[in-house]
Length: 411
Image (tube, rainbow, N blue to C red; front, side, top):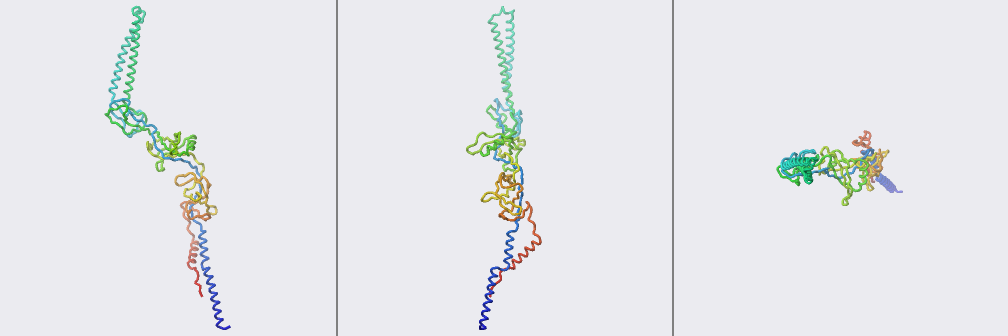
């Protein structure tokens, strides 16, 4: 074989070997194994999440509705006799007691009527005494022969007539006395006086309103509840006192001491599908005012040993509500749950799906999927800082990844 042909074949073989090695290096670049290992390790690295164990507590079940405060008694004060209003003895907006003097009407005309009836009584009493004496004398055996039967009957009738006249005078006196009492107007109930409708000096009649008194203790709160709660409310009412709270419009604070359910209406409103109910409150602090709007909250029953978790642990999925449940091997699974009673704004009772002591994720769910490994942190706890060895290993991996890469192939 010629010498130049051997040289050409050797060069071709070397080029083939170099290209083959270059293709191999291109298919498996230097550092690729390290990168894949780091990526795999990153996928399996534990994810720090905040967890809470499901607790057990007695959970009250409430029904709530907007309510309106109403006075138990409202009395409009009208005079019972006509006359000039000479004085008022109350201050508007202040409390009055039953029997307290509120106003006075000029009593002079009525006093004159009483005096007239009293004088007539005295006159008729004198005539009655004379008639009785005459009749008694004429009825004796000594005078009977000299008194005609008709005269004796007349004397008897005069006695009866004057007795009736005295009785009529006494009735007139009692009527005048009642009228005199009506000139002093007193409060029929304990309550708060409203704004007066008339001033002293005006002539009033029985149709004139002077002031309105409103009873404040106790006081009612009326509200409407959905028809679906009727049987539960009735059962609770029948089994014992149903406690009712009157809250401010923000549902944040009770305005006064709890009251009790007082009455349930006997029919359902067909237009709204609700039934009306009423609670009674002692209102000793005068926090409830007639016409005021409040939020009424009834405690219907209590769920004993209910399973309770933070509300933020519950997630919404296509199949319903679920939570991330942390298993003993520190991996998570999704667990479908059924929510029960809301406990304020922060917790919820779980009716189905969890047991007391189950550990659920409350923060960090967006990074999770079933099977993810987690680092369980208590609320407020921060993830542990990496150790020196972990930091060194991570630095070495970053260095290798930055230095590695596919070599340049070629002849």
